[in-house]
Length: 178
Image 1 (tube, helix red, strand yellow):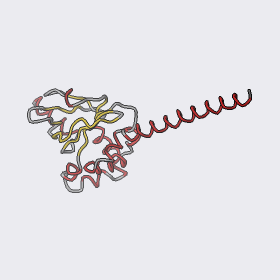
Image 2 (spheres, helix red, strand yellow):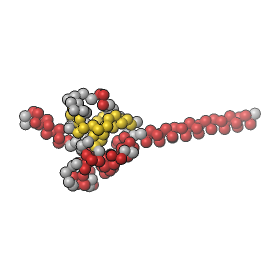
Image 3 (cartoon, helix red, strand yellow):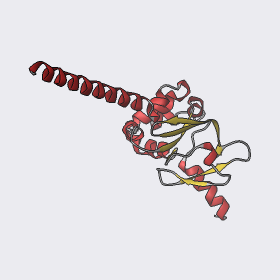
Image 4 (spheres, one colour):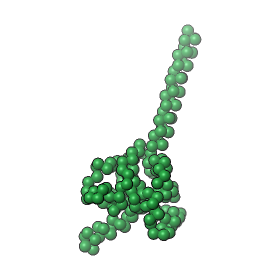
């Protein structure tokens, strides 16, 4: 009787350990598929990863989401005026860097097929970005070079330019005649 009870307890313990290990494995896989991990695994987004770290946004972008990230390539960052990226990566400019990076993030998961020509989408930063589909998918003039890179907490669309919050504000001012 004691032997069968001991065996039953051991069996329960083995099952619990197996479920616990499976759960830990699933969490690791889930974390690996988050937006920041996908960016880290994409060579052409290494500058973005550096900027996200400097802006202390890793934890935010690893959050539950879902988020849609319009991720500028390394080339997009190198196309900024000389010295701009170095200036933005300085600790004293963290707020400005956060503003620029969160201008590339939208709450919710927006797949390429969900985008509409002329659509204005509010960013986490607070301003809106404009979608254009007349010459391929464009976000404030930045071309989407790779769409629908799915993450466990959203989706990434890789773009060929860094879009600045002021780009949209100037466009709206021109459209309104100011």
